[in-house]
Length: 247
View 1 (cartoon, helix red, strand yellow):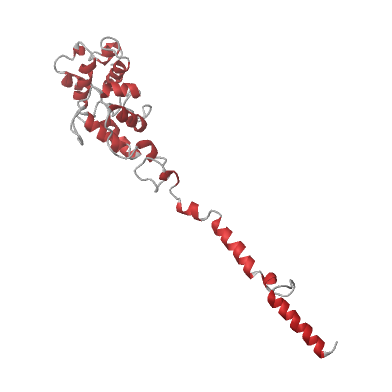
View 2 (tube, rainbow, N blue to C red; view 1 turned 135 degrees about the horizontal axis):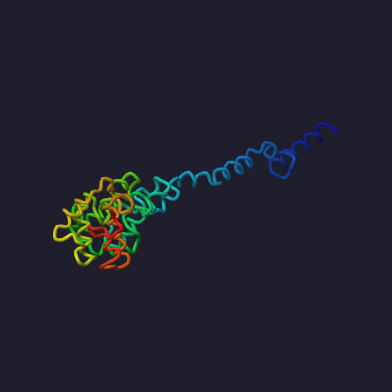
């Protein structure tokens, strides 16, 4: 092949490559700059790295707590949003979830006992933080629900006997006793003084039996509400003499 012929072939080949007809001509498929960049980077970014990163709240995003989105929701979901409950059922639901009956913070035998006792509370003024009223107990229940440390402090105030936060224990016991049990239980007309005079050096912030003579009577008074007992049995056990059960 002479020079002229080779020149024509070379020019023709270049023209075909430039037009994109000859598979073996270009360098794109060898280097992969187009397909490698497009197929590698984009799927990596779309494979889930962004969604988990922005959804760090997890359960906190859907819980009913006071800090959704900033925690895992494991505590707040059970305790509500910090607003005092407005009625006995919601109050008792909150107290039973926060002031667990089997613990030292327990205040009621169960939900129904709580609702029966709650029905006897004076309503009180909304937002009250002291005194024998439903409003005061609802406030302390909402504060107790905010943390475990709060529960230890505020559960006793949220319960039926108040323990100083919602009225004196002695006065609250007598109020609840007289509202349920007939006959006065030999406390006479001076129940707070007589109940307070019962020697109880171990009296705590719970109704649980076995922790002291006053707690024993509080426990049996709750049983009187639970069984709708108005005289005898648990009312006798909650009386000053203890009915042969409470010392």
